[in-house]
Structure formats: structure tokens, C-alpha cells
Image (cartoon, rainbow, N blue to C red; front, side, top):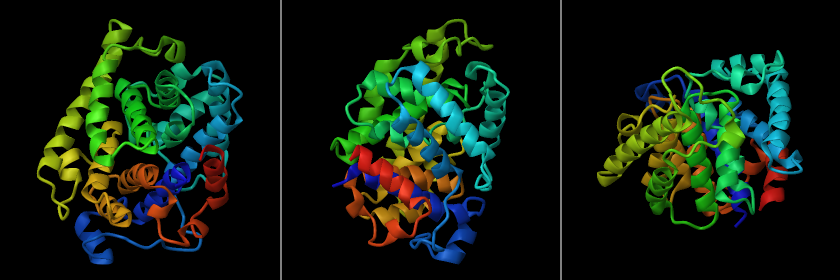
Length: 329
């Protein structure tokens, strides 16, 4: 089924479909594309945003790693993030949190100081999909890698926990879990991790105003993720394919809402992945990030067969995505 390839290409397809709609309201999107949103890639190649570019940076660091130890992976990601920030291709309205944090990394600060402490923007988890596709890593390693890559730019606890859940959702789908079961699996994971601070991965990141202990710091992130999963459950109890999903599960500018609204879109159209991406791209929120994550989830569940023939030759960075998929399928 080539689930890793399906997930990586799905992320890029959703990103490309959402790129021209990100800053439009739903009425303007539907006037241009119809009520189903965009359903065809535009351009040859179809261009992506910083979401896919940063996912490639995460994947490239993982592919180069000789072990999953944080002291091995962090320098690799630091290098890849700096290369991305300096690249002339970094011209896709990159997130300011990422750019500010990477500037601190470039100045030589350790990442716990360089990160933007109060940010839980979706830049933390729009790029985490490759972690969920790694073969043969245990849940603790998945959690550590997910939280580390998030924390290097976004220091809010919910950025860490939402990133872990995003990678975990990708993992369980790749391993064959039914898409409909994912919200419950994420809730169980969140409940089991309440109070688990991964010091070996995060160091003293927790030492921020408002947190008196590491457990208290990370618990806030799990509580906020559980809250948004409640909203997802309520939305799925009365599904409405015609409504803007952001109205139910959030606009996706922040990490936990990007996760929930992407899953919302995927679960509205579990058997029609292109329709799910169109719905995700036709939202009032961060359409490219929502559609990118929806594509990653659906591709992990269904493999490359989820996507139209020929799209893999038309998407930007197809060669890079193919290489990662070949390594992890």
C-alpha cells in the first residue's frame, strides 16, 4: 500500500491545494472553486508552502540520524532548520515563530533558550508527520522525537503534546487502525501521558513563568488537547459536510486545532480523500496546514492509491518525498 509514501505525498497535496486559499474566507474560496473547494493541483509543478518544506527538513534529519538519541537528532534538525531558513525557496510566507526561533539557533543559543516560549502555533505539528512514519520505533521514542522537534521553535506545552498526538495518529493509521477509531486512540494516549515530562528530551524547557513543576507544565498541554478532542467528538456526532469545519474544531492556527480540524475533515470524507482535502482547503482558517495534515492522515490510512494518478509527478519536491517514502515504506 506504500503508506509512508501516501502520507508524505498526501501532506504535500493538501498543502498545495490549501496554498491559494489560506488567507481567503469561505465565500471567496467557494466563488473561485465551488462548494467542494479545490480538487485539482494548480501548476506544474504544483507549489507547496513552508509546511511541506519544514516536513522535508524533519525527514531529512531523521534519515541522516545514526540513532534516535536527542543529542544526535537535535544538531541534525538545527542544521536542516537553518538551511531551510536561509534558502531562497523560503519565500512562502513562513511562520514568524519558526523564523524567530531559528534566528536564535543561528546565534548559537541552546534550543531551550531560542524557542518562542509562549507559542503553540501549528508550525509545531505541520512538520511532524515523518516522525510518525518511522518504522520500528517505540511510543516513547516517537513521543520524544515529536516533542523535541516541536520544542525547538514552539515552547508552549500544547505545541509539544499536539505534535506528539499528530505523529501518534499518523503512526496508528500507518499500522492499520481504522480512521474512525483515531479520536478515541488519541484520547487514550493523552490520558495515559498526563504528567509525563520527558526531561531526557526537553531538559529545562518547563522552567517558564506559570509552571512550578515539570509535571504541571506538560499537563496543561494534555488538558488543552483533551478539550479539543471533546470538540471533535461533538462535531462528529452531528457531521455536516457542507459547513466550515473550523466553526466546530477551530481555525487551525494553533497546534491542537490544526490536529483536530484536519482529523475532522478526514473523518467527514473517509472514502473520498480528494474531497477531504477540498473541504480542508475551503475553510476560514489555516487552510494549507489543515489540508496538509488531513492529507497526511488519509495517506497513512490508505497509501498511495488514495491519490489521483499523475499527481506524484506534478507536485513540488516529488523526488525528495519519493526518497523518504522509499526509505520508510
